[in-house]
Length: 169
Image: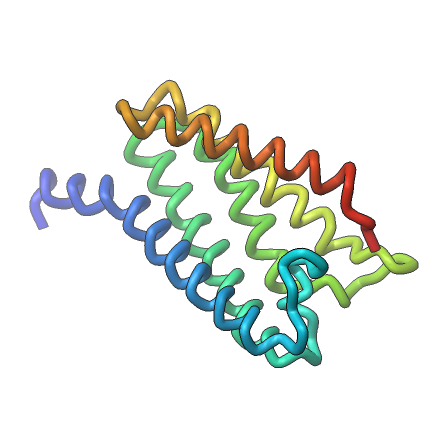
């Protein structure tokens, strides 16, 4: 493959990987919600879908592991081909958090009732991915720069509201 074609493929690859990861996760999450007995978005955490022993775990956990893995690979190409080190590192931390959420569901490694590894990983996933979206604002073209910053801010505000209002374990 010639150099310009290689750059073109690798420069589009991060977005393609993120698109594939996000779409498969969204679809499988909806299916997981449908097969989880009595699942209600008002009363259940999204992480409940990954609890081992529920029918949804066999779909939800591999799906979120795939999302985290594809996001991690994407962060590598963001760093390599766009020289966006700080954003790539934030995004990689968020991807690692996402990956670990799928590997350690909320009913594993409990300290009392608190899922230690899952909780730390979820914190990383939510905060680092939102921070990367906000940081990408300066490198993204209009109109996507506004979408990026709005999504990042909405994610952080939503996470803070969740932490301050949800009964945690």
